Length: 300
Ligand SMILES: [Zn+2]
Ligand SMILES: [Zn+2]
Image (cartoon, rainbow, N blue to C red; front, side, top):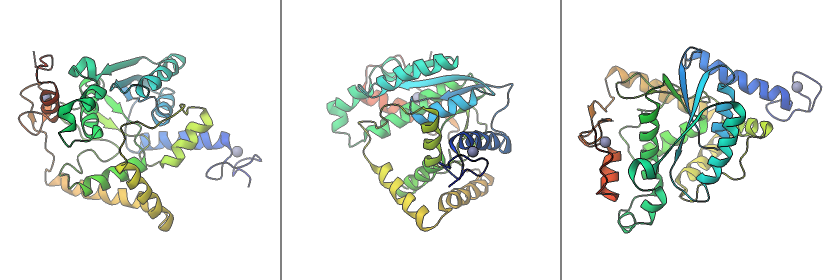
């Protein structure tokens, strides 16, 4: 099959590799424009993991916007350290500043140390639940001096997250969904320029641009998300357009819910001063549980 726009062989979405890359970047800039995600006079932090999605995002945004890369080093030997090495070179080549914040330096313990501890083993918690809370906390804390925080979440990530929150009956289900979060005191506004692009489309772009790292699987990942991913992909095959319809339905629910004033996080944590729905935020609760002697977190 030939490309829709030229005589070369089509590789993805009916485009040759050159025209697919152009199409993909235009889709990203279109989402940014349609939803007013970013503007050229803003200072933008881009959350980067060293994986293909966030490298693609950083690369595309650096073409038109004032970006700084922010990475979180959880302390996962043989995984994050390898990705961060590649990321340092990638940012250097792009001429983009990279800031790295680690669990060890911020909370006194690396993720590996937490997961290996007896307390953790007896807690019934999954590594991803601690890691996710800490990562979000640090990204928000350190991106607050920027106008926006851009993340590489794609359509598949968003559908999976909504479904997982439904499975867990999580009341904060609607809080973070949508291509842009509401302005809220204590929070940097988060934007997702890949919001309407599928995982497969982002992967194809990253592959064609040579952005794939050597590997991408976290050793602590425990599989719920990949099960949900499989389920969602099966549904998409049976009902083409399922992913987009599903997320559009939730965006409508979110709009209606916003009118009822559903959002929490109206207080600040009495330990660290960051926004929280409870007197002590989830991050401080976890840090004090696994590292009771840690004082650095205390607000000065
Ligand atoms: Zn072409
Ligand atoms: Zn706190």
